[in-house]
Length: 135
Image (tube, rainbow, N blue to C red; front, side):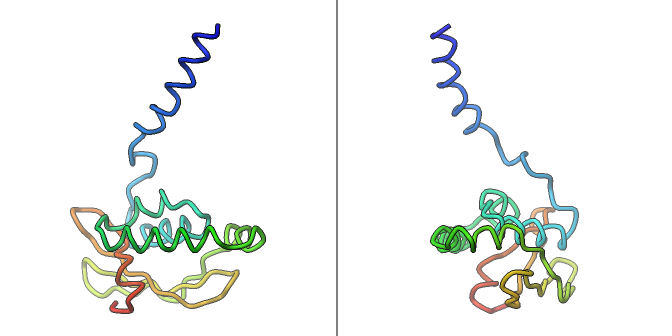
């Protein structure tokens, strides 16, 4: 019995580590990718946010910085962000492969924009453009 318990303790982290990005469905369109990314950030699910984001060094660094800032918030603030809804002000089509979503959340009501691009047949947020203002 102890051997089974010990084996289970060793295998559970291995299964979790081996779970790949298939935990999340591919975004159906630009709006879906933006919504999934934003909701992941609001709820503190940065693994989900990363799945819907262009995977490059600058984006990963920016998302890590956002995650660290998020962790420093009070428990009340975290709960408020977690419970917040996304309010879309505009979903602008820039081209066939680029959308800019202007949104805010119901908690802090700060207007933000997120750029969503079509790369390798997948819609993903290009977060670095959101932060540097060069949409």
